[in-house]
Length: 341
Image (cartoon, rainbow, N blue to C red; front, side):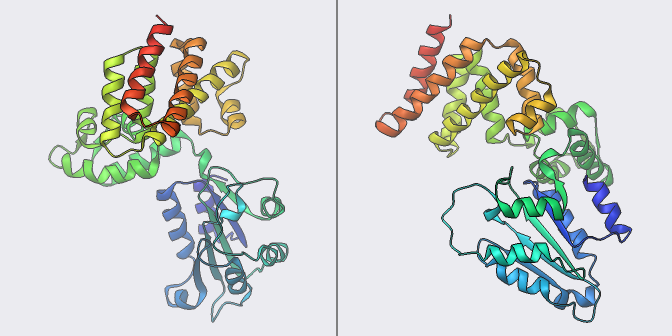
């Protein structure tokens, strides 16, 4: 289901007892929450609405609430946040969740209760029994698969509603600058509105001056510098990232992730995989696949492998020696360029 279809069904009072929202899009999640809360009359909110965080509350509390009849109303709304037990992530659990009580509830949904499960994760563990039940019982909205078109429309609507103008090229640049993250782009709009208050026009120059590049976007630029053997620019950007209090291991991990993705996309696209199939198979956001497909046209497979192995070596040395991250990266660039001249 798409977000506009969800909102239309709720407006038409076509309300189901269980909804699952997947994906970490904070802006859209806030909108969705507010839409569900608006289903409960204001004078009933105190008695018929509850919001639970699974990182500090047992699921059994939410289930008990969901089993209660609405108090002088037609519907009760129970929102469950951060259900990390639906993922395959290894976490140190603070709470011994009563998963069986949740499974029993899912098998006997209450028609007078609306349960909204918000899972802000890239993927859930499909092997778990509880997820198999939810997949069958819930209306599912996957925000991980939100299209570029929908993201652009959401941004354009906010810009238009505030009396500003942006052309398509500048809008695309804003998304590129914020790694296609709608929540991040929305938060940057407030700064752009202030900066462009007089002209009411948001252009590429104003975006460059106001919008801070995300770490992922900086790393994407760094990958390009490395592959193009631009030693001075890559070392300068790397040192800037370190100076901005980014952890060297984190930077290296994102670099490794990006080169791994480029290698996978290059191999699989040569075998005929489309952009959609690549995103599904690799379980990666379609925007990252789009950027990777655009980049690999100019990249050689050997260079991608050499860069990846060199970054693996950096990680090993970071963990086993006292050498500075900046020096390790400089040595990596010298070796990489020497190998691929």
